Length: 420
Ligand SMILES: Cc1cc2nc3c(=O)[nH]c(=O)nc-3n(C[C@H](O)[C@H](O)[C@H](O)COP(=O)(O)OP(=O)(O)OC[C@H]3O[C@@H](n4cnc5c(N)ncnc54)[C@H](O)[C@@H]3O)c2cc1C
Image 1: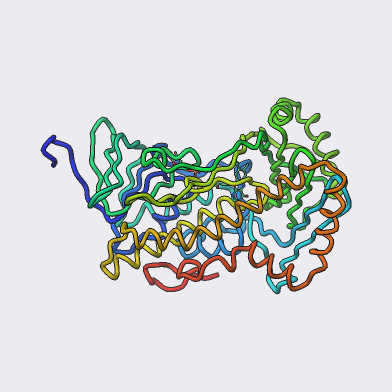
Image 2: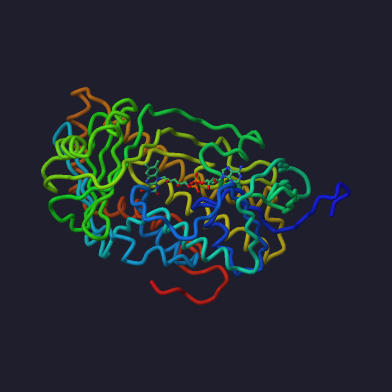
């Protein structure tokens, strides 16, 4: 107890934010000697709702990371649809790119998994570990990131508790209150677009192919779910996106079928539609004092390449590896040296992906005819480029993004390699 009568609990790591990225940091460290506190504002659901509107395309690299984190349950074929190939084409000019897993000797490029399933599998892995305390639902009221220890005061069920640790990870999303509290600025802009999401029943089989058509207002993606349906992410200027959400199912299906083209036959919307305003954000630094940013708190990117969460999972794997290693060697995990290492490891990958997703959105939103010709030519050349295409595919699949234990699909606690 402190002199003010408040309880104090000491940990090796505090994670604020129990979205997928925060849960991933905790799950990665489950059953290691590292003592972890997780603070999440919303209650954890008992079982994921069968919501196929919020799904994520996970790269093969992220599938490996999740296995290493003990969350292979999310990749069960009944819930996760394999993505075997992908076709990207320009809706405004000739130009197409086809990527097939077989071209680089693999069976799949990745998988499409409902977000609720990923969170639940990580929660199962993290929540049962003896070295993890989950404060949920709980919010922090005061936070300090400088000095000997990072501290945050939380309120839970009317009681106040001070949590202390040498390092505090902010996994509290795009508008990160922790990032703001420690005064880390960001480069940020609004795309003026929203992503409309829905589950779609196509007339023809999708053959586990992901489709992305670049239209002038933004890209339209249909991603293969198990059972023959697709998950749609359609980026549109914000006012048009709102209009789409308000259309009847029949009216929406007609607009969608027209915009997508004949490849999958008639497209029918199943269930309610959702919409998410899109913006870009990249923190000016990932660390301040003893605070480190992971996932959307560090970088929020356009969803057109389906890579935001994949980057967040790589952040969480890199951070967990560094904290476990510092604990093993007796190094201070919140020291400038260790946190600097984290930033050097994650910044190039995050910046590269943030820049090319932003660039693609601008390039394909550009109506000028002088840009359309080179754009189509570039896509067609890349399609026939052999080794360059293979390299880009491996990069896109996250197979070149890290070399640590979790990146190989192995757990940090050394409890044997999980099956692929
Ligand atoms: C339409 C759309 C489609 C997408 N598709 C893909 C895809 O296919 N593939 C992909 O890789 N990425 C995709 N993304 C990106 C991906 O969804 C995000 O990158 C990812 O969900 C970010 O996870 P996070 O855990 O960092 O943040 P969040 O999911 O925002 O989680 C933050 C957590 O912090 C908690 N929190 C906030 N403040 C506090 C506080 N004060 N105290 C305690 N807890 C707090 C919140 O309750 C929340 O649980 C998509 C995004 C959109 C919008």
